[in-house]
Amino acid sequence: MRQIARKLQDAVNDDEIWDLQRRACEMAATCRATFDVDPGTHLDALLCSSADIAILVECAIVIHDNTPPNLGDKFPDVQKLLDRDRRLSHLLELTVKELIRTDQCGLDTAVGSVWSGYHPGDGGWRALPTPDSQWLMSLAAPLPGQTGQEVHYNILDGELLVDGKPLGRLPREIVEHPTYKRIFNQVCVRDLPRMRLTSIQKILDVIPANMPGMDYVTRSPVYDYKVIFFPCFFLVLV
Image (cartoon, rainbow, N blue to C red; front, side, top):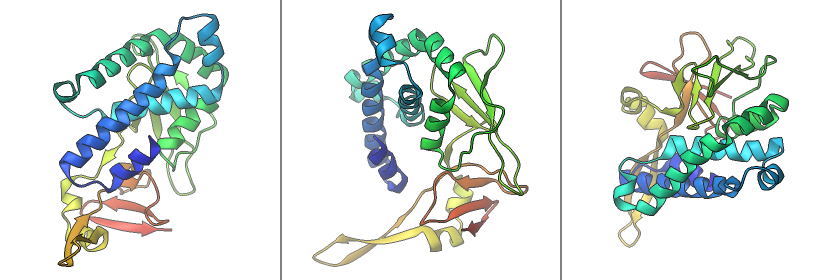
């Protein structure tokens, strides 16, 4: 699943992206189905540690962020798998809340697996008041010169928000900027016998930046660098 997620970062063709998203969702939902057992003895044996929570939550985030549109039209079996996963989320809601309340390391690990720059804050996670009690909120620890960011996680649907915004990709005005194209376009051989070169643009996964005046920051390092964007330009930091 993580290998497919890494391939998605380099995918540029719409059909390839759709297929990789479908595969990521199917693998994540299959993994979560491991916990779809009778409540009581069997569930208590399978879902009982922060490591179990980390797996469950990471897969939920992958499903939420990568479910392609019109999935049921082409892959009805995968759609049924995702429908069962939604039922599972409601079944496990109270158990997951209690496990996170007693040990929050699993949730922190899951968030860190999809956002490498995440650093847990001192305040921990807390549930929002009813009717939004399915949401857990925390304040990420800020680095020097930066501000802490609010992180929200929805136990029922796996949605992860940073400062109220989802993790995603860069907007078109940045991706089409000449400087972005010059640095992040990749040249590869498409037609080996004729040595035909094709330029492929690398699309970066980003989150809202936590530095004043900046809009986005890459979710994971790019060639060992963190890339921070502001409108129409970008700044590269080690």
